Length: 495
Image (cartoon, helix red, strand yellow):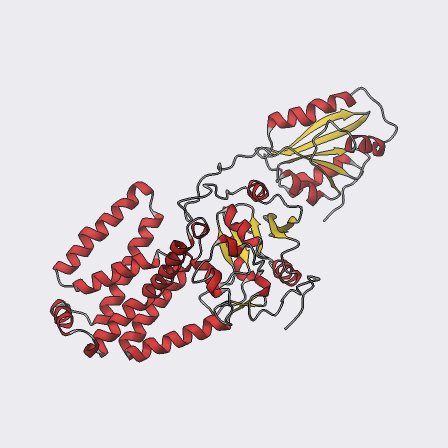
């Protein structure tokens, strides 16, 4: 990190060499106050009209003036009221290049070892639109975009509190990606913030191109399928999370914000739960938990019961299953694995292909492949029904789709090899794994385990806002937390 020199020519040569004489590096010579100056910009990152209005036009007043020293001219420019309001002092060549690539114009003065960075950002970005993955019936239709500064504005519009803080970090040795911690200073736990800063400081990647790049550094439970770091593309959801003491992480270049710490029960919550009547929201919550169990237990349980415990099935239903399966060439477990793999292939194809072609994949999969597979006797009709029920149920809780897929195949193998005993063993291992996860000092399964009364307030059920407004719950005060907040002075205390 080289400091700026008082020789402006040396600074320009140094930066052009560092940028390999890139064509988007533009330096415009100026004569201000009797000194040679250079205005540096990165083409495409600034607004030309804003640059002319806030910088070029006001600087014309200094052309015919003469100042005794470059330092005095620098002081005059930094105190001028009619230049761009967003001004930063730059001291090194690395800072100059980083500000340029972030949409700033940097002014250097010959004889002065400091520069002035002025915000005139004008790069193109996708307009704010409805989030595609977290749609709701009521409430806001605004979702995060790729530009981090716009995302910060969306949060600030909803949270006009002086305690809302945006903490800036720069990650990636090459990309210098802007990362912002978003939290309420009177809600967030200092212990959680300390751990977050320490884990983010351990990120030594050359480029951070998406928030998913830093998630493994925040989530230390690599042996688990579940993550203690969540994500959202809705500003209102993020505001609701930070009101509970959580910390949001906004990464420039991605329309998703990370949330930490993130608990297991939050995967079953949505913004619609808080805009609908409590009785209906509670019904939907219970429905989501039931769909989650179906999504990974149903195929394995079906294989286990039909293969090892047929006495558990009603006689007429068992007869129908036997009639459907007697002409299939594969054992039931192999058949279940094959058809679920085929479904995942079709789902991935429909997801990656352009939208115009993606619809054709569902038609081919449902009509051609599905009907032909049953007609030719490759798979039985009951198994097609099981796949359909499992697929629809897995889409009810999209945040858990990735672990559900792995669990589904694992339980099919357990059910096919060990029967109901294998399913029971798998559930015990799954519960032990869930209960062993500790995210930033808070049990991942809290308040279900360890049990807390908030289970009846906003987990399986949701009470009305009259009761919710009286409970100032914070995530660090969950049952089993090792960073509980003292009720009066707000200081952290261990358990």
